[in-house]
Image (tube, rainbow, N blue to C red; front, side, top):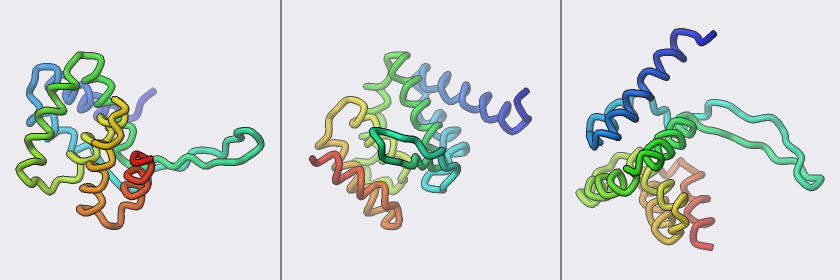
Length: 142
């Protein structure tokens, strides 16, 4: 049985998706920001074995929410609209790292690596302590 905070989070997520599906991206992003804990470590996955080597998966607060949000928009055929809206926001020099994280991840899912790298570089300027943004920028440039 889900706990009350989990239930509340699922309701908020459903509202985020519903608003995005209606094209109400501003309202959707407001709820998204309420739930997002971007850059904060939230959980560490268990050790996994791959070809005899060990790896550790580290998820940060906001990762699951961002993945689910992008997938929901993609499934609803609203991903292009969301991307256009977010691009307009960051072209206005908005200093909101959440926007850059979403934009970068959308580009990664679309395999548009140069644009993803540029978005991650902008994110690294906003959050110099965010090591993952530097890593993803470098990885996208390869």
